[in-house]
Amino acid sequence: MLPTLMIAIAGPSGSGKTQLAHNLIDQMRAEGLDAVSLLHEDAYYRSQSHISFEERLKTNYDHPDAFDYPLLIEHLTELSDGKSISCPVYNYEQHTRSSETIEVSANPIVILEGILVLANPQLRNLFDMKFFVDTPLDICLSRRIRRDVAERGRSIDSVVEQYLQTVRPMYYQYVEPSKQFADILVPHGGYNWRAIELIKSQLLQKLR
Image (cartoon, rainbow, N blue to C red; front, side, top):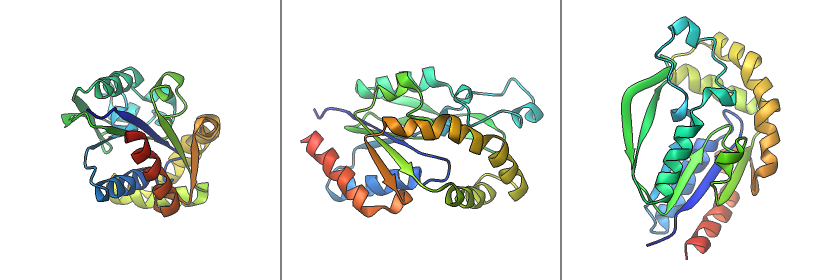
């Protein structure tokens, strides 16, 4: 049985973390390795079903307290031990978890992507390899506007307001300082093919 490699991909919102993860998975599949599990830190936002929708709008979703890290750490540990998990599903329009879960199988490679995955000491100590997608904030903001309006039911004004009030300040307080814990900085977002090739080679070498 292959060992489980735990991979972290961190970076600011809109930097290209998810795209990097998907492109890396595609490259691994091209090498004949289909067994990769992908988790998103966003799925582990705390349930807010106990408070009103209006109160949910006031939550700082870029602060570490917004995440259920004990559950995330538990799930990563179980995947590392070869056990499947029931991953939460987050509803962005309602700002809380849905009642659904997704079954995620244990695989030789487990990737977690998210803004704060390197900011939590207990969490980052679980990873064998750690990457930080280092994309300029103006590009991140433009990507975030397009994504949140198209996919998450937000208005441009609400996205910009949230960015100024919490996203940008929390980036400087928590996200940017966490890049010091990365093994590799990945500039130019999720389509940096040289970086993807390097990461793929490192993963294959470790698995072999």
